[in-house]
Figure 1: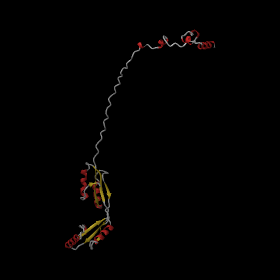
Figure 2: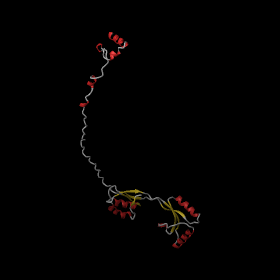
Figure 3: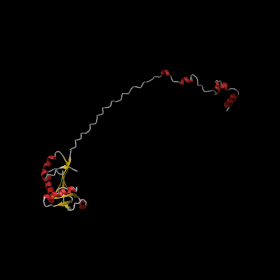
Figure 4: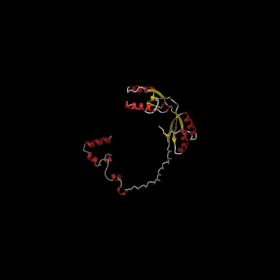
Length: 225
C-alpha cells in the first residue's frame, strides 16, 4: 500500500522523469529495459547460420510396363442361309431322305402352303385358228392376255388373282370393254407346300449339297428371303 502511495505522489509531482530513468529502481519502480545487453542476448547469431541446400532425390527407377498383347480372336466362319421350294408333298419327302446325310441341325423343312388362285379365263377353243382370232379381237380392244398353261390350253388367261372376289371385279371391268365370253375359274386349290431351309451353310458343307440336286427336281438353292 505504501509503495502505491509513493508512486502516486511521484507521478503527481513530476516524478515521471525519475521513474523513467531508473532512479526509483531500488524502490521497485522502473520501466522494463529493452536496450542492450538484454536484447542482444536474445538475438540469434547470424554469423553462425548456414544455408543448407536440398539434395536432389533420385527416384527409385520403376520397371518398364509391358504392353498388353491383345488376345488373338479366331476369324468367324462365313455362313450363308439358303433355301429351296416350294416343294409338294412327294418332293419334300424325297428331299428329307437326301438331307438326312447332312450335319445334324443344319437344315429344316418348313411348311409353306400354296394358296388358292383364280383366273379370268376364255376358252377352251376348238382349234388354233379360233384361238388366234380371239387374240386379234382382244388386241383390238387393248385387253392383255397370256397362255393359261396346263390343262387350260387351248385358251387365254386375262388375269390371275389371289381371291375370287378380285377376279370377279376384273371380269366386270373387262365387260365394260366389250369382253363377253370370259369367266372366273379356280386355277388351283390351296395345297400343302414345303420349303427346304439351310440357315448356316459353310464352305465345308457346300460339296455335300450336291446330293440334293436330284431330289430338288430343278428347284435351285437361293439366298433366304
